[in-house]
Image (cartoon, rainbow, N blue to C red):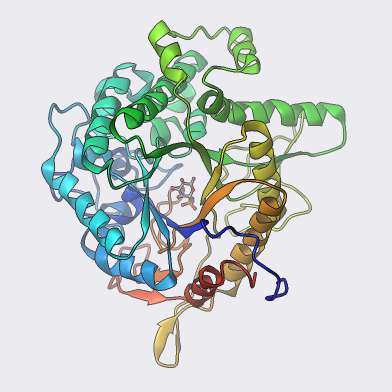
Length: 473
Ligand code: BGP
């Protein structure tokens, strides 16, 4: 805590809010003409099995029923004072199979209603176009982003979105955590080939298709919605050398390159030299057309990212083991505490990464995910169900202090949306018991519960932070 009388480092234009994704909140998986998405066949999350079709144990099929309760939820966000709300559009609600000729009007109308509700409360929408929810048919028929044809289907989808919502949505993100396709090709890129069988050639070609599609989305935005701001979205994870040995520092640089490449292409409009070297030395020959090269020059307005943890790197292959639940791998940092899922807590890392990205790209930054997954216990206080989530308050407070420090360092930060501002189904575990929200949702891992919403202690805390513009952090 700093002195509440200290002036806030956050600019008046700073956007405060929360973030979600369609597949983790909406439910109604077969309502309103929605098609099947890859999430509907992933009942166990990232490391679980793939099923043939939707199965009843898959919590995402009902989610937290945002599809029917969006008005109530948005009213709660407004009560906290949100000025921005990040959500994604489910591609399979708009194009049920992904390759359909015409969009599904009922799906489009749902997001009209969500936008109406946000507008009513003066909350700025921040829309993710594709958040881990490729239509399943695109995975089955085309092998997802491994196929160049996906660029055309995505283009059709994006054109529909900008025609319909371009005049009312200012902030857009093209792909959630686009760098994650290297690590979770099915969830991130709808690539049906099992990861062990996927060649680096195919994987990097898929990366290329996504990068081209992302640039194409920016180009479409310029044509159809000149006031819109388009950002890329990456997983940010600062890397520290495990030892002071130069080989560990070099290992950090190389691992960092694998992530930074995505931002570099989005901001600079071409592949950087170190990426070309990696491709060359690994015998990867990308199919890059002249048209692709031209498209990549349509660069983003801002860079957004998720931040949960930092990790150590080492050149020693023996020591390089994956942290549990951490999709980017790396080595645990002996100086840091971790959440129950092994995600190491490092507020300072957020300041470091904000400075790194700003120094590198000189583009406004948007923190679009940050938060603590924890098991919450619902208790009664003054006759009301609530959660005394001081651990979550401490986590968010410490991270926001570092955002303030980065702003004082001169970094241009557009805003901050906490992940899972309302409890939702976890992406990695596909369970509800890994909770992030300010709002408790009464639903358990076995699917039971009334879906009632309850304000946690952090709800009031965040409302105060927003009201004071972060002055009391
Ligand atoms: C990010 C995803 C989100 C979200 C978050 C938390 O990688 O963009 O969809 O789920 O991580 O992860 P988890 O739900 O596994 O705790």
